[in-house]
Image (cartoon, helix red, strand yellow):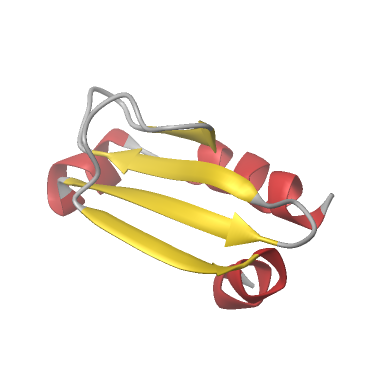
Length: 74
């Protein structure tokens, strides 16, 4: 779905430079279509993004609908 596709694009775009400059882990609690817990890790190694809890404790947790998440990143 759109949420998974957005995370696929994010995962492909994350660089070590993003990790060095950001140093943050973001957790998204999404409701509706594509809902669940997702994360973007811009703190560990080369960074990562995906479904589930982040590999380390999140610095920021955001709750929103899956549709709003997709709008925010597009």
